[in-house]
Length: 147
Image 1: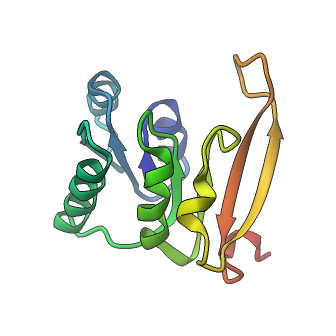
Image 2: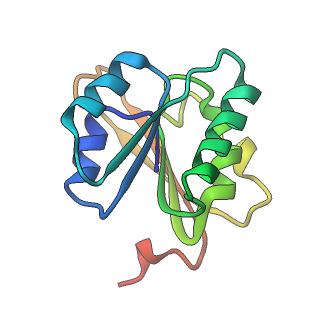
């Protein structure tokens, strides 16, 4: 599950059984849809209010029969901090939430009191001059760390 699609959608599509993307930018949504990848379900949710955005995204996922996800990526252009609340409801017990650019957003506010652990990855992203952080939140039961 991606909140915010783009190049990552293509990367995940090559590695995951199914990718669900909710995109808020029409141009990115149209680019993703134009590829017609069989294992990608892309949806456009473009609301100017955070609560309406979350409500519409949640209703759309329920309507399409999506309930829990093993991997959730928050990389949307809008409402990243608010999306953490929704991601916490949608992540499976074995899953992880990946928060891009976590040094600039308070993802922990929406994920606190959920017994989630956190690992931060600091470094340079492609095409970015300054280092940034990506954080992964997970439960002790997460399959990500079981080998």
